[in-house]
Amino acid sequence: MSLNKSWHGRLKVRTTEEQKAQKHKEQQKKLGAYRLGMKQILSTRKPDEYDPTSLSISSQLLSVNPDIYTLWNYRKEVILLRIKQSQKDEIDGEEDLVQFLENELRLTEQCLLANPKSYGSWHHRSWVLMKHPKPNWDNEFMHVWDYRRLIINKIGITLTDELQFSMERLNANFSNYSSWHYRSTLRKLDAKSVGTELTLVQNAVFTDPADSSAWFYLRWVLSNPTVTAEQKQEFLDALDDLEQLEPECKWVIMAKCWLTGSLVLSDKDYIDRRVEYYKKLLKLDPTRKGQYLDYLKAAEEKTKITS
Amino acid sequence: MATLIKDIKLPDNVPSNILFEKHIEFLKEYGQDENNYEYGMMDYLRVSGMYWCLTALEFMNASPSHTIEEVAQYIKQCQDPESGGISACIGHDPHILHTTSAVQILCTYNKLDVIDTEGVVKYIKSLQLPDGSFMGDKWGEVDTRFSFCAVVTLSLLKRMDAIDVHKAVDFVASCKNFDGGFGSRPLSESHAGLMFCCVGFLSITNRLDIVDRDTLAWWLCERQLPSGGLNGRPEKLPDVCYSWWVLSSLTMLGRLHWIDGNALKTYILACQDTETGGFADRPGDVADPYHTVFGLAGLSLLGHKALQKVNPTYCMPQHVIDRLQLKPQILLN
Image 1 (cartoon, chains in turn purple, cyan):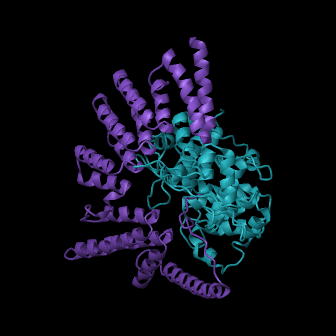
Image 2 (cartoon, chains in turn yellow, orange):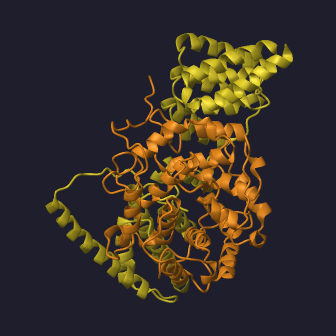
Image 3 (cartoon, chains in turn yellow, orange):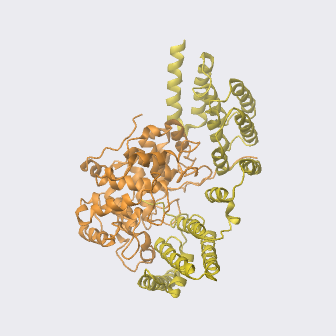
């Protein structure tokens, strides 16, 4: 079991026999070089010393393919050796090590620019920074969310600053699921913050009702127990207005289901309305009819009980 | 400002069925020639690759090009005698991903006796951290994928007692997000591949009660796009491997009927390469064993009669899971 990245999104291209033969020749050359390189590295791998030529070959191989995980392991072993060496030299030891590790960071940077999803490169980079005597956390990888979290912990950015940053990101582009996710992780919602969040979502869904991201966030905010009945009613009224403008938008109807359903409000009037909403969803979004039928059945049963 | 849904258009002539002969030929050729470029260059994922190819052939009731004994002997040579872990290929380092794939293959072939299974148990146990999480290998990368691998492997070996299951569950639970989904570490974004890992993990540990069932099933069924294909996260393109990650999760949650099975079936069939055989991520892309096994597994979950029944938790033939008398938790509708 693995989530493999090398095989995604490669468009098939038609080639002539001649092109095929040429390609085959080139591939065999590459394969030969790869095997020779791996053999050189693995045969010189020792616990107490390392071969600079092998180290340099491993950079070349990783730049082409950062998923060769054994090579990252090999480089970590070399780093551990360098750390040991640096401790023996009181005068230049640290400076030499810093130079060495900076070079290592450059390699991961190069790999990540070519292949931003490479797990091996990300792990190696964080591992190196943890071993670095003078890590520089202020670098260009702040836009990568998981990495940002790591850096923020290290340099201590305040929550207010992060909330502001997240707000700016969302205002620039509401249609960014990662930004909404990131915002959800910043703090626990309370009576004070739910109001701000509801306003933010309302702006987003009115800007582009067809974009799914903000609706996922809305469902989460609404599930918070501190949302008041008044706030729910206000949101429901706003959605009624939005439905006038966008009668075919399934998300508006879905959100009305949450607001009138088990998540929030439930009395006879709302149950009847919900039956209508699910019938409408069945028409608007037949792909997910199984889901709506389940809910419709539940709502109809409730209608029977209450009437 | 209107949002354009990211999706693809299906080609006009989608095959109406599975191209069995082509796929079998495609998979058998993989690994037959030592000097095949892709096979040679991808040695760093070979044992997992063997799991994809061999399992895909099993689903189609076809035999591999190598004998079971040859496969088992190769895996044996990949086991590190010191740590007990299994590597991607001979000479490379052990890793939990390949250890799991190896145990899955050997269970399917009923050949566990060729490796040192106690060594494997020791290896998995050594990768658990005090917070319950699992590392991929001794170098410390933590991911919920590895939690899943740990319990798949140990449950197949009937040695779940070797780890702290309680803490392992706590860690996975701490990776639950606002959308009901799971990420690779606490606070990391939800992703359908990790959903399979975390839901599968909870299915094996019998703790599906932790899942926010309807919220998660809603997130999962919203992955289906107008083309019929499924994506792995909002705003992304469809990909055949998500037919497996999403569909198996929905099956474990008893909500398979929340997506349009026929539309998905058409999408998966459209990803077949009618010339070379095999499935690609999207129609017109290059086919590979990884998308082939998950395409077939998806079709099996959708009830394709000519395929072996697949177990949604293990992605292995159901008859193997039955033979091992394993009963991973599955919620009924």
